[in-house]
Length: 199
Image 1: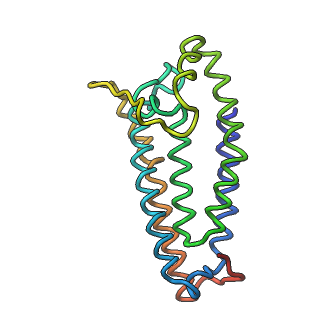
Image 2: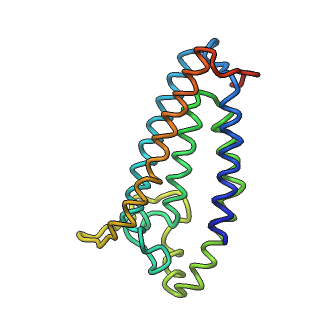
């Protein structure tokens, strides 16, 4: 239930941002073109990190989400690596719009919404895994990774069919970068109308 609600809220927020991007002009383009290039570069770097990070998470979590408590790989440095890398990717996409407003809206929305989601999900995990989860949360940070405590096994068993499905969700950030570039091109050749400018 919580998972479905989270997905629906994320989809609605994404659709609203998409409408803003679709019909606005990037004010930096005319006033400071170098700024747009820098923003896009940092956005692309963050999207690359997020994509690789979500794939790394999927190796460990695919098929095991509620079956067992995952505490290795990315889950050894943060309790919520998928949310962390999703945040990095979303921020990267925001920067790839070459504006300041869109990434700011993304950061604010994450800060307001996701702590509640994490708290709710961790309450469920505590019921499922008891003392094991209590020990886990006492050693591993909730969101921002602590790389010094990374633990990775030499061998890890994955579920290829589930992992393959997870690959597509990780690649969404890359595909959305392409869509943003397409929208920018349509603005430049005056196919898409622009009703106002944003920084």
